[in-house]
Length: 563
Image 1 (spheres, helix red, strand yellow):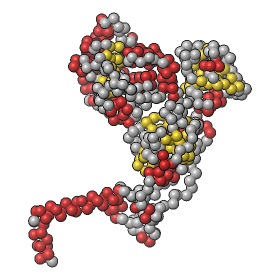
Image 2 (cartoon, one colour; image 1 turned 60 degrees about the horizontal axis):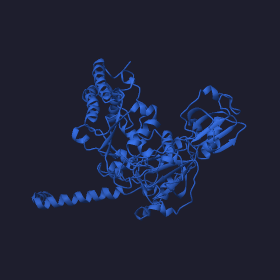
Image 3 (spheres, helix red, strand yellow; image 1 turned 180 degrees about the vertical axis):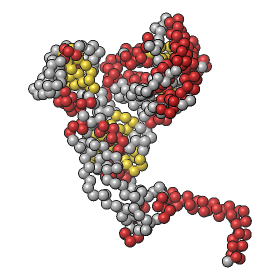
Image 4 (tube, one colour; image 1 turned 90 degrees about the horizontal axis):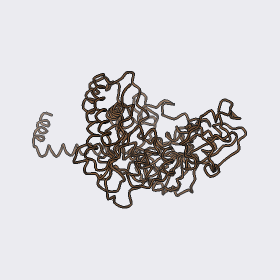
């Protein structure tokens, strides 16, 4: 035995041999890990083959350390109900899915068959109804839509559509999700839905102009939740009502839910109650929803619900349904290279991404960026990946404020926001993501004072530099854009050299929030600004206000100054 150990020691002292031996062992170990990571299920074995460990599921062999390989599912059975299912799905599956044979794992499957396998696992959430044709000009599912070119999954799409009360969820191009109450297109071959989901490689998410559509098995009819329709106000009946609101229905037992339900079924974004008549349509120049009336003029009780108002023949009570207005959803790159570079300039946290969303809807063209943000690209801002000088985008997002960078642009839209709100928004983005929030520890820690000390002066110098070095600058205040979106968006689109279609701008008003507008600044239990911070920021506000007025522009809004 001793002689054997001496020989073994001498063997490993030979460096080349020892190196190649260890290299071979390393590659062999890596190959084993790679092979195990390719498994998507457990091998089927008899119960007698199980090891002595406790808590192992039936049919799972004892694999020792190898049981921890990524390719094998957890051996501890999952208790019923711990898997995430929304309350809106009927669970129809009572028996576990039949396991495949061990030999099946080594066979090759087409993308379509893998998609079908994934869909079988989704049966308890929703029912797959097939592959359908989709047209970018006339969508098959005409409700809300969202994109994620990195993490899209079937369940995520179903979850988002069901939370908004839709009956159908469809996935396209591996990363796009569309919702709707009605499927309005013919079937396509299953082989045409052949693109894997970006967030899960085991499921199919449609194809090129092809939708993988699921019917959401709602637990109860009330889950359609038309009560979440947005109240738009009381409006005078338009002159050409049959043109402005082309679909109508007499409802002797009228209620808000019934009218909203009817217009949603007819795929219209507006539902107008006129006593016992329900009218449906789009916001147009004939019915802009810009001139609201006193709500008392619409305060006539509904025949079918005594605690609701249903408007009158002359004054309509209007709700926005969950149907997406698709008149402004098409976007593309510029057909010819732009001759001028237009900047969409702002201090960070001033709403630049939201403004890009509005501009893309209003013009139908993608916006670009001086930077590259993968999360924005994955959410549908496809111009994000283009070089900012490519000339294929309608304008370029930038936070730059140096003379050289500013003079690179031929004109600019300068978006200015209340520094108190902008600083908090950027702090939230920095520590919580585009639509997240900074934690309480960040607000209370050293990060917030240091952030204000560094960023507050930049808020002022950013505006001053663009006013000084910019060649043609259109100033837009974030607060004015929120307050009067139609007028401000007309100004912005005018600078971009696009003839503004009023119906398209009215469509934007109904889709204005987008995916990257933070739902209000989270209310803190305390004021994060100290008296010293406020004194410093107020001085910067006065400096910017003076600079704007010296150029014959309106000064900063009154609400910039704290009360």
